[in-house]
Amino acid sequence: MNKAGEIRVIVLGLIRHGGRIFLSEGYDPVKQERFYRALGGGVEFGETSRVALQREFQEEIQADLMNIRYLGCIENLFTFNGRQGHEIIQLYQCDFADSKFYQLESLVFSESPNHKHRALWIDISRLKSGEFRLVPEVFFDYL
Image 1 (tube, helix red, strand yellow):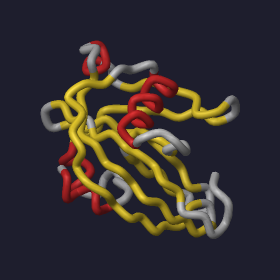
Image 2 (cartoon, one colour):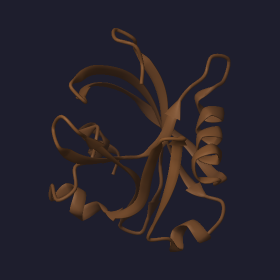
Image 3 (tube, helix red, strand yellow):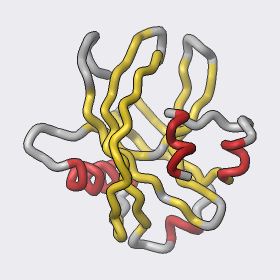
C-alpha cells in the first residue's frame, strides 16, 4: 500500500470476451464490501505504463498480452480500509495471447506472499445491475 499523501501511478488492463470482463476481486474490511477491478499494478520508475502492464500480468498470472491499445487516463480518489487513496490509472484494452485464459472460470494468484487474490470472468450486465461492484465506477464509460 502507498504512503499517506502519495499519488500512485498504476496501469490496468481491460480484457473483454463476449459479454464478460476479466476482473480481480478485492475486499474492504472496514466497509465489509467486495469489489472488482481490472488487473494490473504499479508503474515502476523508469518503465512505461505499457511495459508495466505486461510485467504485472506476467508476474501475477503468468499471462502474455496482445492487441494492447491505450484507452486513456483516469484519476481515482477513493477510500480503502479506512484510508484515503489517490491514483492515476493508465488504462489499456488488451487480449490474452493464450486462449486457455478464456476457458477459465477463475484463478487464484498471489500479489505478495500473504496476499491471495481471485481473478474471474464477470458478465458486464451483472456489473451494470449493481450485483457486483466495479471500481472505479468511471470504468463503465469504457465498457
